[in-house]
Image 1 (cartoon, one colour):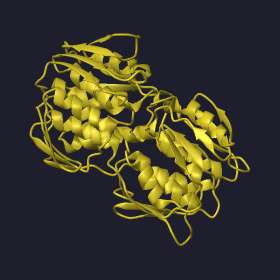
Image 2 (tube, rainbow, N blue to C red):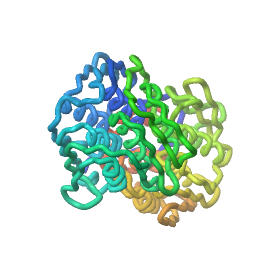
Image 3 (spheres, rainbow, N blue to C red):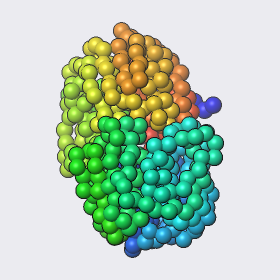
Length: 430
């Protein structure tokens, strides 16, 4: 296995231009493919997950042109994929697998969707149940409730409200919302239980509106789409910098810059449509000095990093970074309402607990929380397993800012969202 040895660091300062948001990139690609007209997408994330979406759309017959760096021209198919019989390998890209499952369920074709072994362990049953309520025909090819899947033509029936659980993954509701306009019928979706990761649904609704479809929302429990809807190209769309990726650099600033220096991330501002932009607020609660501009956020060293007890439902991905900042805090930090960590690229609660203990932390984990008590001194030369999870690798790079060397196993897993992360990290640390 490849390893990366990060030297002990004591200082962080500099400026980073963020890669595009994965969540926005893959949603935008699919909406552009389903729309009427041609869309130019600028600042698209170049990563494994977007590569899987681009490959899938090309296999489905969508015309794609990479006309400049991180810029794509997508000729939409007006809701009708040309290829009605396709085998799609989607890796471990949940932001591709879930929305494509829903869109292809109403595409009157025959499609086989599969991925890496971990993708086949990530639940999709709640989405499939909801799609079946609308008349979709979907078969499980291995374990009930999990990929791989076989899809064939639906017999659409949306006379009753479609019910979907909201407490497993917001990607299920996102997929349903994006796909149901293809039926051309008025539809109501009812969320059963608490909807987690609400900011990701806000991203979905915001982007659907840019492509011409408004969704009526009654709180977070009921969503209504009008009939005779059609996605229309906005002609040009820019992808925001990734707010989750920003969290690592902002945390570095809070941990290891000085009162006269900062770490600044560009491509993201306070008015971002991404919920993870609120990581900066959580970092401020821990003592970080945060500044905002129209297209940047910066963080300077905290006088003291404070332990917090925080409901993290609004920042599920970026909350992982808080678990590392907790290693530098003045007491025990508790991160709550993070059950969705269990069904991500790995079981992130279990993985985070295991690896935090390697650097000396005392950790308690529960079904939907993690509690971290920092050690008096971080353990040097810990070897961190990353579980083929990009966020585990990026998070644990921050441990080196405590003045201890650390080894990251399988560092190239960051290619999922941020292929040159470790180069950028090295540029701001010393």
